[in-house]
Amino acid sequence: MGLSTLDTVIVLTYLVGIFVLAQLVSREEAGHKKSASDYFLASKALPWWAIGASLIAANISAEQIIGMSGSGYAIGLAIASYEWMGGLTLLIVGKFFLPIFLKNNIYTMPQFLERRYGTRIRSLMAVFWLGLYVFVNLTSILWLGAIAVTQVTGMDRMLALSLLGLFALAYQLYGGLKAVALTDIVQVSLLVLGGLTVGALTLGQIGEGAGIVAGFKRLWETHPEHFQMILTPDNPFYKDLPGISVLIGGMWIMNLSYWGFNQYIIQRALAAKNIGEAQKGVVFAAFLKLLMPVVVVLPGIAAIMLAPDLQKPDEAYPTMMRLLPSGVLGLVFAALVAAIVASLASKINSVATIFTLDFYAKWGSGTSDESHSHQKHLVRVGRIAAAVAIVLAILAAKPLLGSFDQAFQYIQEYTGFFTPGIVVIFLLGLFWKRANEAGALAAAIGSFVLSVVLKLAWPSLPFIDRVGLVFLLSLGLAVLVSLITPAAATSDPIRTDDVDYHTPAAFRFGSVGVVAILVALYVLFW
Image (cartoon, rainbow, N blue to C red; front, side, top):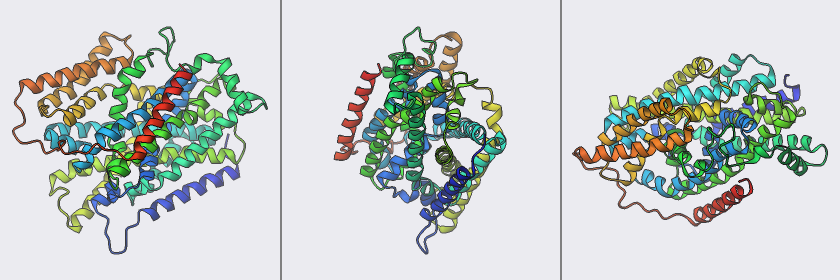
């Protein structure tokens, strides 16, 4: 199946429009030359709406749209816990983590680790994040995005993969984070509109002329097992989402790591005008997270009735797109491309940020050199790093991901080897002054070793439960090693004693609303 002329015009109009908009919004005032702060942190001037939209645009991409729809097809609504629990996690990040990061003028997560612990842990984690972003995140977005493009247009998969990567690179190469963040409100609006359109039209078909509500009711009555948020032990997918552990166990660790200590996510909030704007942006993103299962999971569940014989679950969303009429298909396809491009651009920019500020700048005079020539040089290095990262991801995508049926679950399990240690390191670094670099290194290395040992020795243990158990073991290890080794010789430069945790009224009222909606959703679909 290919796109009609109308669909093609809609998609090309989007691509040209978003590229031009990105260049326009990232222009500097006459006489002002782009500095490292301008390029990597959008001049630390992002408003709340840009932060909230950009958080979601960076988060929702092919691995969510294609991957979570595939998991919705195979597992059901239970996979939405990643989205809904993520909304609650964002409130915690906004209330307790961002005030410390912004008060201490943090611009990368490795930088925080060096200031809090030392250079070894900074280098170790910077290498880990670069590897994760290039060989897990970028590759998964490219591969799953290429699957969708190929199924809708008939284009060769490697050609689709290469075009997506190169467009995302060009889109953010000049403007950096400002180009990404200030256009993400357009990307998110298109993403939500496109996803709601797919959901509405598929439910309408299931309703057979009786309407969307009737279609949803019929889908729920026909497949009630796909509308259970808390899976029972006899469910074939219990190992992926182990019942009540989803609410009180390892998923908290996964979400805290992703939303609180992940460079390409937290970088948006670190670029805020001030803490109030950052917190309002976070609560805006939390509300958007509540909506995301309708956009990314519901079409996959609908595919059970409309396309019950798919070879792979990850084909669910592209198959539903093929049911759309001309014109609407172009809009929804543009929304999918928007999500892919926005998330790719975010990760590319974060790779460039970490490489430039946490590796390259350490070799020379660092970021403290404010001379125009040095700042221009850092921006140029960042652009080269971005180009190298996307080329590596394009080459590695098929070998790494070509054999997986549910790529989203692969991503979660792989990152689950490392996230317990990451959360331990940051939580102790933020809230326990006695934690030292030896303890942090023990947690980082111990998390991986313990995860591998438990996976081999206890293969029946659900990976979310394994993440929670490894977190507790790594926490105990980090505390023990910190106590039996000398405290840091120099004073800790990360200030927490004078941090103001007061939040604006918009954040407080918004948080109450998010929690109330979450409670209602889990009661309804328990």
